[in-house]
Length: 218
Image 1 (cartoon, rainbow, N blue to C red):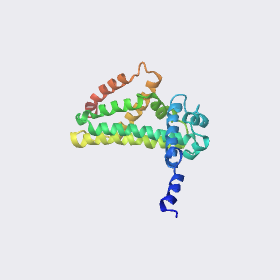
Image 2: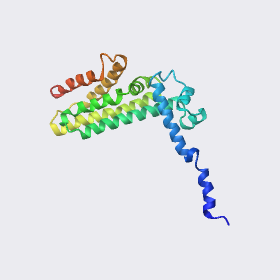
Image 3: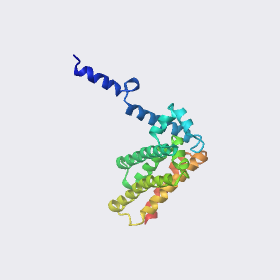
Image 4: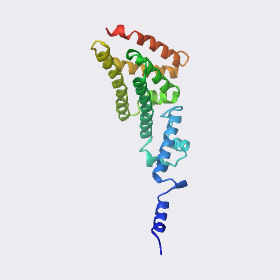
């Protein structure tokens, strides 16, 4: 007589793929390999110079598996952009919330963390500041949404200075947008001219500017 276990075992085996992994697990691994391939290829030879076949070879997946995970090359880029910027935003948020520095000095720590998060691996900065530009209207709208999260974080920081440390009421969103824009251009400068725009110099000069903010805000 066939037992319940005898009936269930083949069903469990059928739901398992290579090396005992489920189809969902295998697809997740392929997705991450493709994202890693995007980081490598988009971050070195560039988005426009990379095609789907190259991404598949780098990730060791078939073209069929690529299209099971991503609609097209642009979808992979946007997914990768999100992953990189979420990681950077997480790091700077933790730095802002856990810093033991006085509130008025925490922005320096946040910018230092941002610089290292983006530029320790130049491929990240290239993808998030250069390769994402000019891809499509959809990509640009997506980029603006992500950038606004950084603007909101900086704006909230200034709001805290107003509420807790008596800074004057000003249009600090303008300051926040200006800072985010400056960091974007500084990353590009570091990529293009690392001798004059190395990380240490960027962080040092930003610290000098930030030290003047209390006087500028008055």
